[in-house]
Image (tube, rainbow over all chains, first blue to last red; front, side):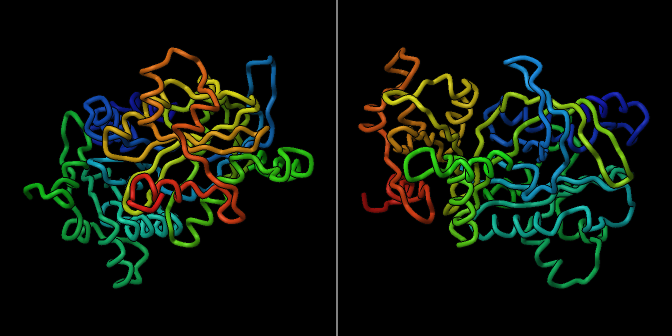
Length: 188
Length: 188
């Protein structure tokens, strides 16, 4: 929450005329989907190991020591048109490629499992400097990983094999529009 | 994690011959489903608001102040046979009823939305004293809430309208077996 509010105030002098982080854009987009009864998709809480808790009163608990854990799954999941949806979202400041070390190997494993079990899994990657946001289905990422030993995905690969998510006012990052085309028989 | 380990050690002198908490049982059951390629279902991390973080070194971050937040969704979700699965799990020490204040109203709202969007939503409730664990589909809970003003669900209601999850060695809480019968045309 802090991060998102912080991101709003950073608005003025970052990322050209957009300003908000991908995370903040997704938060608003998911709220839009929820309020308009389109989909139920949430970001999971950050996993934390708590090692010390104080109880200043009977009803209050204050965490006094904790550590960030490596997440075992992706950040976002939920339901859309009866289908299970699962994705990870990342920004990069690089101009021509997305380094794969931004995604934990077990997160890619997780997305593969989702695919195998009949769900819809993907990455959303934003190149902040050129302000382009792509959706890359897990099946495309799997093909890339089979065919390449590169440690990053070139921007050109996203342009050819991914799907650009257009800037919109509301929802800001309308990734369900892409899923409609890819998985629900919408017009391309 | 701490809680689960704690529960294991409590093993010897609680809850008759079972000993483990429902949360620990579900953790093992979900691991079983995952390893055996049956389903991909995880417990979400506990939502926390972090207000102070120290960085003793460049790579390490220590949370020095944080607070527990009210969760906006249920604890568990994932995918089974292509379907979106979503549930909340609770134990009660009461012998004859399950108090509804154990579940946040927005968690029930969330489960209703899952139902509306074509997912499978339910509660798993364990009466620890009598060592019985029930699955109560959200559509049954919705009916109960429409027909009753009671603030707790009697055990007898679970026995009549819910589905008992039998004790097993592995997976310990085989709730997918119930879903097979209810939603995937398995034999009752």
